[in-house]
Length: 143
Image 1 (cartoon, one colour):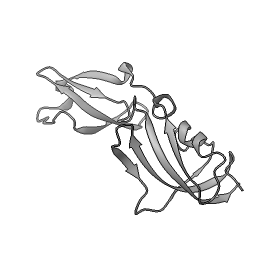
Image 2 (image 1 turned 135 degrees about the vertical axis):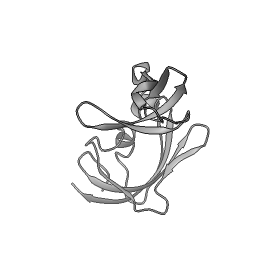
Image 3 (image 1 turned 30 degrees about the horizontal axis):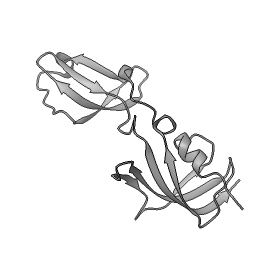
Image 4 (image 1 turned 120 degrees about the vertical axis):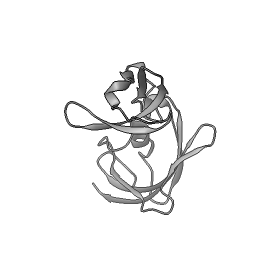
């Protein structure tokens, strides 16, 4: 039996950047469980597991467009420093959660601070990066 769209599968994985830097792994945790083709994982990961068989290990190279997308300048915004309140103390690289008008929250990273503005980047930290996953199929749970 091999993986097809609609299968619920469990995989162990290690994710690295093209320079070899590891950014995530299921090592020491339960395998990742998801429904193939449902959009629960990035598109390149979804497509990369198709046809795998239980026990198989595969290396999946995912270009940025099929991972977290390219970095978008539209996701970078300068906010007047006063919007953060009087005692605002933060550092470049710090992450914050910003609440949107619809009540949802998104993570942002502070990329610049000056006397007048705080620049926030809402791009995913892996946006614009090609990713490499080593994936081992543990189980095909259901269709």
